[in-house]
Image (cartoon, rainbow over all chains, first blue to last red; front, side, top):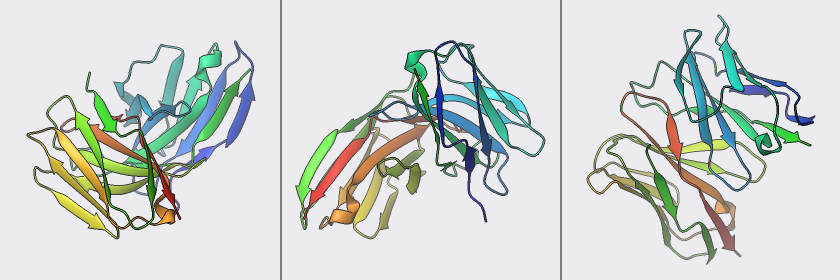
Length: 115
Length: 111
């Protein structure tokens, strides 16, 4: 049973560029959440997708956008990259919108470096 | 906005010793999660605590939740070097899967 997968594993971009990160949830999961983890910090919630719609959003600017596909996989897009966007981006999957309290399962992350 | 505070942020301890990591949060919640993260790796789920008084144990780690005090603890018994990692607590508001994470406790167990 494959867990949460993410691609790419590492990425280097320059300021002003755009980036797309991808995530496939754990088998049987239909909800995908994205988190940003800066070095030495805890993960910060970006947004969550369920039934192909953004359901919740954290305190991130509109430069951060996403999408969920019918197969439940998801993309995170970041436009007009800033140096401060350098971080580990984690995808987490779960079933439903959390009504059962089940934990989220995290992928290995994509490490983004903006130069 | 829900705030989650962990302490200590750094913990260096000898093998065989006991210690407790504390996780305080600012808003009523009965959903508390503990994760472990090794350097350069993702987060591994350790415990899920879903009610007041919940206690879970796995090996040398034991987690508890006091929803009235808005406090969770992660107790380490007879630490071993393999427990060296960063430990995060996360709180979710009822019926939502938006997790609020603490800053993490970096644990170093010295042989």
